Structures are given as structure tokens and as C-alpha cells.
Image (cartoon, rainbow, N blue to C red; front, side, top):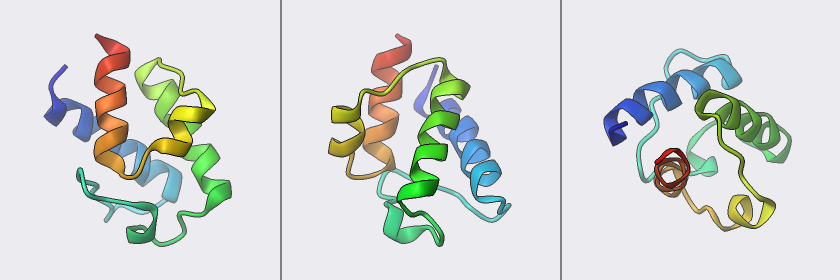
Length: 80
């Protein structure tokens, strides 16, 4: 699966979780860039991403991720 394909699916997850059709994430996107992305919604988001890509994030990985690009890197490692 290409990075572009991951972003297509990831954008749909973000739009669903945040209930906003205008969200488009990129490598540099952080929680500060998305209105409403707090610690509670973060749990919902991680769960939705895990379900979408059939992967699991361990807590250490979740804490270390600084932006969506790092999330995509982890997804790529998890599905290959």
C-alpha cells in the first residue's frame, strides 16, 4: 500500500472521528492543527486507525508520535 493510499484512508478516518468533512491531514499535521483533537478524542482516533489498518499501536509508540507523518510511517511498518 502506498503512502498516498494510506493518506486517502487516513483522511476518511479523521473526517469520521472529528465529524468534519474539511479535514485533510499531511505528514506535518499535529494535534494542535486540528480543532478538537484533545486527549480523549486521541484515544478514539487511535482506535479507529487501528481498526482501519488492522494494526495495533503500543502505548510507547503512541506517546512518541509527534505528527501524522510518524503515524503513517508506523502504519507502513505494521502492514508490510
